[in-house]
Image (cartoon, rainbow, N blue to C red):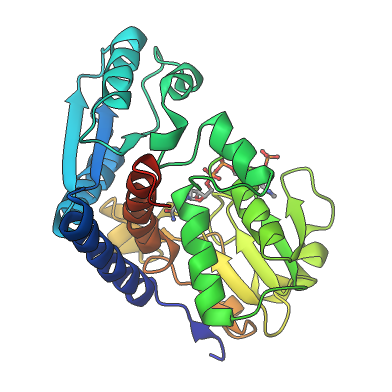
Amino acid sequence: MSATIIDGKVYSGALTAKVAEEVAALVRDHAIKPGLAVILVGEDPASQIYVRSKNEQSLAAGMHSVTYRLPAETTEAEVIDLVRQLNFDRAIHGVLVQLPLPAQISEKRVLEALDPDKDVDGLTVTNAGRLASGLPALTPCTPLGCMIMLREAVGALAGKRAVVVGRSVLVGRPMAQLLIGADCTVTVAHSKTRDLPGLCREAEILVAAIGRPQMIRGDWVRPGAAVIDVGINRVPFSDPVKAAAGKTKVVGDVAFKEASEVAGWITPVPGGVGLMTVACLLQNTVTAARRIHGLE
Ligand code: NDP
């Protein structure tokens, strides 16, 4: 194996520690305790785990943290009402609505109700527009985490050829904007892209945000490239005994073993990008608190 592993545990640990120091300084110097509110509607098991982790980690960083657990049959009007209350709650600086929402609730209308200054997931049209215009924005946590790891692991990014596979509002698009902001030359690929392997082989920075287990093979990777694997895919174990027992494991969008023999840097799954996402949520909440209080 030749690639340097970009260890999400190391980077997220460092970022969380930095956030905790920033929280302590805000409390000490300005009597401001950054506050995060998370709204969870329904019983989705993966969402339950994410939300618990967000709550625990924000409390551990010294922040104020509230989780609203609403039943699956909650109406759109009730969620929007809660969002509006939180927009005016002075103890809350960040509001996150855990996605996906149950079918009766429009994600778009809920996000429209959210104050962009408290949109710590960076999903409102206002924050997406600010990011695309190169203005200070609250940036979606996953691409923000990818960017922090890239800058710290790889160093200078200006002029590098970057390919982002995936164009979702949550990951692919903001990732491309952040790379443009770092002076990379960026191509965004998607399901209609022709000759994806050939395009990927041009990339000095390759970001995979597809949701297809191990789709990016080793021979798609340019030697020495930085490979950031955002994918989280649950697949059955190859061991037939474990598979028969219904056990699953998590893999990324990149065939890690093959790719790590060619790449210069690579993030593992699990243990890579996923860990940075919550740390960036905490960072965004501190950023929101500073801006709301005119400190930034
Ligand atoms: P989406 O399903 O919203 O987007 C997937 C993107 O991949 C789309 O743009 C789609 O293209 C593209 N795509 C799908 N199939 C192909 C293909 N065969 N060739 C090329 N492009 C393809 O997913 P997300 O962006 O929300 O998430 C992507 C992955 O990242 C998932 O595995 C998700 O679980 C994971 N994730 C991880 C996070 C973390 O914290 N680590 C956070 C968020 C997501 P098109 O637009 O044409 O349909």
